Length: 125
Image (cartoon, rainbow, N blue to C red; front, top):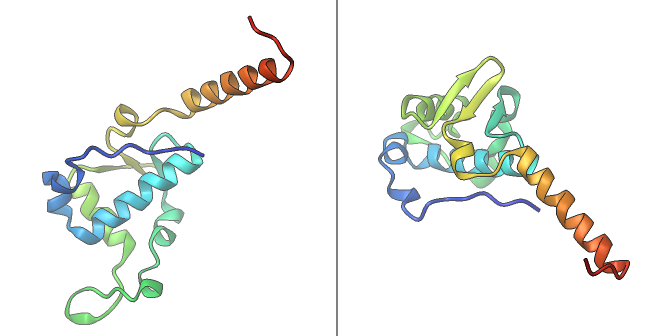
């Protein structure tokens, strides 16, 4: 299991406020996706549509009553400076400033596995 880090001022951050509450939820889901799949903050474009299933949650936006469009919300996140476009999708701005990289996670997991192996084998040094 991996974790993502959110600052305790996360909900009040001006960029999130500018993007709006629906984009904020998409952002959180994207953070979780990146943490789970160790993408270093990268989100493939083909994943955006499935990060939040608004219809299942019964959420509609505005007067149209239609579910929000994740791709439009992603563009709000770009406009707010939270995400950046890359050639295949998006990158969460400063993701690696607050969350460990894939390499760091794998390194820590390997150290833990070795520590457990040594403990199980009765090695004390």
